[in-house]
Amino acid sequence: MKLKACLFDLDGVLVDTARHHFIAWKQLAESKIGVSFTHEDNEALKGLSRVESLEYILLKSNHVFSESQKLAMMTEKNEIYLEAVSQLTPSDLLPGALQLLQELKSKSIHTALGSASKNAPLIIEKLGIAQYLDAVVDGNVVTASKPNPEVFLKGAEMLQVLPQETVVFEDAVSGVAAAKKGGFFCVGIGESSALPEADFVVADLSHITIEKLEKSFFI
Image 1: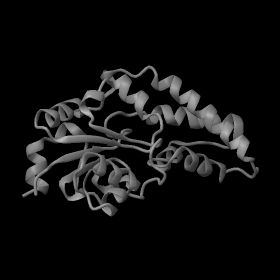
Image 2 (image 1 turned 30 degrees about the vertical axis):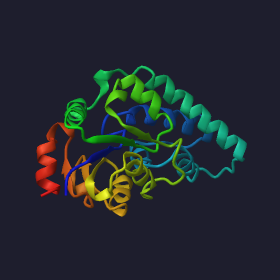
Image 3 (image 1 turned 90 degrees about the vertical axis):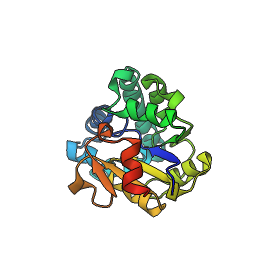
Image 4 (image 1 turned 90 degrees about the horizontal axis):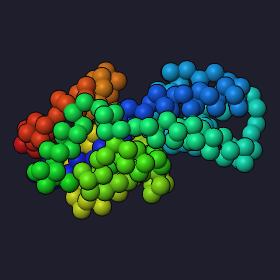
């Protein structure tokens, strides 16, 4: 089986905007909902949509909020977050990300983004990596959140490849689960103990080359 495509999650794989999410959710939780928001809470939101993230936080509150109030909260959180990510530059790419994207492009291996974020287009623009992505599948075009494999299956469909010909790069448990449910090889980014379902785990993309991928998964 030949390696034909790579699908990348965005946050935690290509760039780290977790700190911006944390600050935005913490500000909203404490000022509008009246509950605490810890780094552990922020970790629990990995891979969740904005709606699911808010519902997680609201479970900590005894108050009942209307749908219009929830919508206003999500809008406010997103405005705080957008202000922060609008300052991103290519220097914010995580180690090895640009080099791997460039190598994949030079070898004509297709690439796509598979992220729950609705802000993916803005972040891609700020990072300057649009030319290295053949397709973008984000929260604006998928209806099911990870661990549902929709985002990756749609990415493979857009690239016209099979899951068995594709590697997914993920840093979240739910994302790894989505990749495996979809029939993809999955490289976990982070700690092996935190991503036991991944086929292979590395600290970051600087540890990955096309040769290593082909030898590991496509013998």
